[in-house]
Image 1 (cartoon, rainbow, N blue to C red):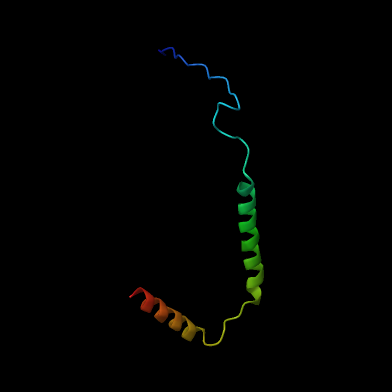
Image 2: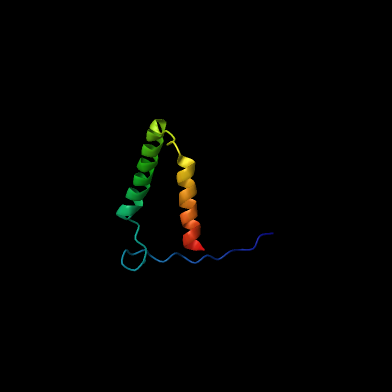
Length: 71
């Protein structure tokens, strides 16, 4: 046995009184497209990347400077 349900009618939607703007802002489209483009450029340029000689010494130097700054 089902009980009757009572629903309230939705109020009329007016552009000025709704408080929500259905339009997208410019950055909502530009930022994801820019991020995708930058990731694509990073992937495309990674084939030409080569390890620098002595990179471990450079990494060690940066780590030492970081630890010196923090501690």
